[in-house]
Length: 142
Length: 210
Image (cartoon, rainbow over all chains, first blue to last red; front, side, top):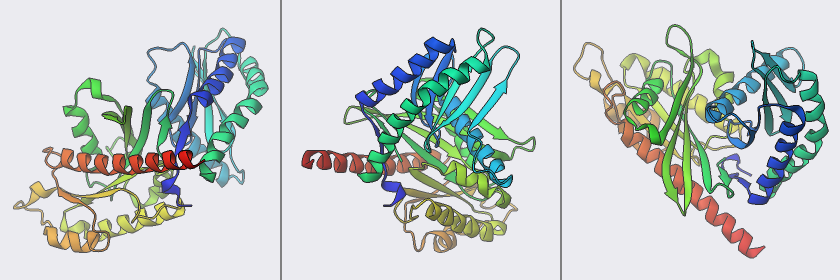
């Protein structure tokens, strides 16, 4: 199939399931905000509380960042770095691959820790990964 | 690969400005950004070097109105034009829905234009996309240099070099003066929206059958 004719369709039901997973991470890990984006830089879903955040730019930059580090990984003989962490003075961001097509971005401050974020995320990532791969698989078949 | 979000009634598409180094891709986006109202566009994000050369990409997000009750949001990207940034260009092309090829009208850039177009075809092909199938518009930039000390190529030569096989819509432009910028954007947007509408109709038919 020609890659250009592929669509990604997110139904209301899909989105509710994804938002349910993201919401669980936000409430259990005390993160500010959790976003799910696709690897071309499009935002799929967001939960949490960061009203002033430019999510469009964040999504595009995250995809670029992930893509660039994947190239670094390949230079080092790795297939990919599946997680990235950037630490700021008070704000931190954690990126984690969810399957082949999407990336989860978690924004958090010093009210929680990287360990808690990773633990809560690992508990949900399987469920989220299954929902996402269903969406992308559906499009491959159509 | 448009993102169709039925929950938000929104379609997100990606348009990439491609072309050789210093042909004016970033200037296209800067002009669009400078003259569009804030309500219809987002912030402009640029990852560049101190020498004003695009290192990774520029990004500008815009609202194009509605089709079939759904909001159309496009993200305009540029790629770094220099030859050695090919890996970055491939990354930016991921999920592309339409391409504007910006050609440099300067005579000295003739070979670079052709090389860049071949590079575009190759990078699209690697993603399983044919350059003949994807919505594509060619822009001949720097036409304002006609009559100046810098020698520019006649449009016929540029058309022959770059568009004799593809036969896609093409526009003369001067990105610094804003000429031809919106004509180019309107045409590529029209082609992308038409392509997305066709895909939605195809999906509707499939759903009706299923």
